[in-house]
Image (tube, rainbow, N blue to C red; front, side):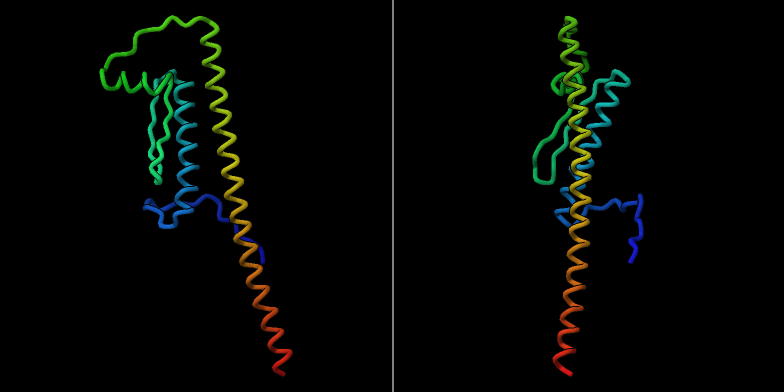
Length: 145
């Protein structure tokens, strides 16, 4: 029986009831949100701060140049005092940002692979149940006749 591709489909905006699906979706979307925040800060030289509380009350944050600098600027309305970065410090910060971006991409890829593996496992479980039901039916018919 061929699988019908689902492709991208519109998801109704309502709280998910299944806790497992909720956690997986939260992790994927959190990663995507942080990737977008990183891209925005890199491409537009914007100061960005994101704080997210998970369904299990864990705190996740992203800030560029740092979350403290962004919150200080937001609360006071004043930009932080300029710091005199040497070339080495700027290079180190750029390396950190690049590493963070790559790690976020890698995490997103691994979460996608995990989700696909879960779906394959569910399909195998369904096929096993159908096969077991078929063999039980054949077994009963052989011994009842």
